[in-house]
Length: 183
Image 1 (cartoon, rainbow, N blue to C red):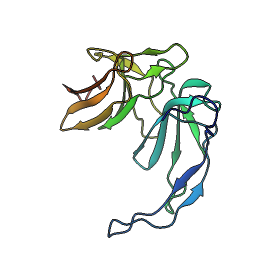
Image 2: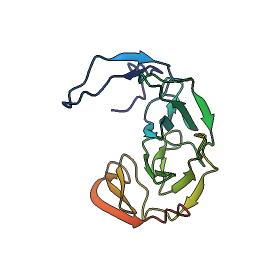
Image 3: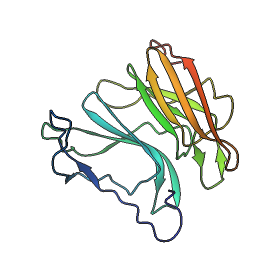
């Protein structure tokens, strides 16, 4: 459910646990918290770093365009958090995926205005973990939030989601990705 409204406690806490060879998991522990509380964001791992993209901050009051990242230590704990290139606009309930060395953010909503977006944007992940500036590419055919997103075999898939009002779709969209330019 959404974090808006009374009765929700948004946190900056980060938990981690080892995954055993049997597929079971170990005991949970906390590690370096995010610099601000955050919900409705996306999180990914790439090249030994965890990335947290957009979402809602300030105890569920404001959306953000910020992207933060931290290195994953050999023990599984996180190093200190750093900020990298922000998204093109504030957004939450978006999908984010990585293909090759590009991060893509798809759809979402600006909760303050209630406006969903069809925007698809991408940034190159640099070898030092930072992101290049975000660039908008071909948009979805309609505004969408709360979708599942997957990249595989040079294709970007967007699965279901919420469109206008409370309308939910089961439509699966896909488009080819050019791994050399990110578009």
